[in-house]
Length: 448
Image 1 (cartoon, rainbow, N blue to C red):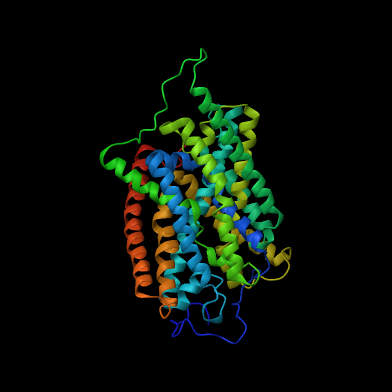
Image 2 (image 1 turned 90 degrees about the vertical axis):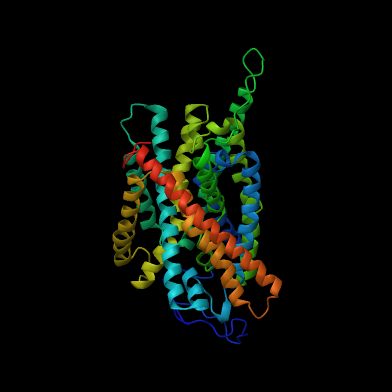
């Protein structure tokens, strides 16, 4: 069935024919489960982890933050497993999220899912450019605190580097060795931020004379409505931390058997893969409490060269990670315009320069215009991660497996759908309020 095909009549029908693979300009079934696991893990431990101490733990506190991160991991694994298990529904590999939705519901759902996913990935990409720009500015400030290199300038530089990388790497499977490089960069900034945070935390426990200093303040900031909105916004950051919104596109690259191998990748992501996230998030909040910055490397104290190395690693990892989350858009554009063959073909190269470069120029403009990183994380989780990962996943699975589910199982899925729908609406309102407040506090193209 083509893209946006009609609703299925029997989603559980057994097909004798080999699994059909839709037309695409990118590679399919070429990657091992371990390479896919590293794609997922790089997404979870991207430079966004430098913000979770401030954007998750500060608004939620120790109990809310720890319990919230663990519960979010469990429900995210469950929701992603639902999507992974219907990847070959009806004898066709649904290599795009919108293809799967279109197969289950019809053409309107195909378009709606594509719109949601585009918004999700666009905002994630915008966030990565803000992150890369922030890391670049933090590096500059370590050596020259003269306010000459402002954040919007750093964001433009970051956008240019991202565009150069996007032009050179034709598709997701071509990342190859870059995934290992990205992992090394991630370990650098996570290790540096965690070690320096623990060092600062230990030092702050004692004065030079050995007398205990006042305890760190873990009080949840804010009061009244402001506190409520920030808490709701932090819940969106919880689900943002673990989910890509593009699982079918990632699963499309994995070798057969696709469901079994994808589950291996997911188990790796949500066990080994989340350890660095927990380490940096908890150590940062433990050290600085409610005064933790939204970019943790701005809070830590240590040798200039060590902090500079960590910031440059965060910058470079953001460039690579952005390519992962931009790949569904690149695949759509490449397939639509018939871009196949050698990546270095003059036609293909000039196409990537023009189209991908243009896409990232717009991303960069929005990033420089509204460089509020925490707000982008909250809004992304609210308006797209909740619907794509939790609401749509539960309902699509229920429709696809309706003949095999008990009444109790259907009730469970409906509870998930209703709960996450309410959370999505509440978190969207909270995120828009935060952006409104920050827009009044800071002008456009702000040097934060």
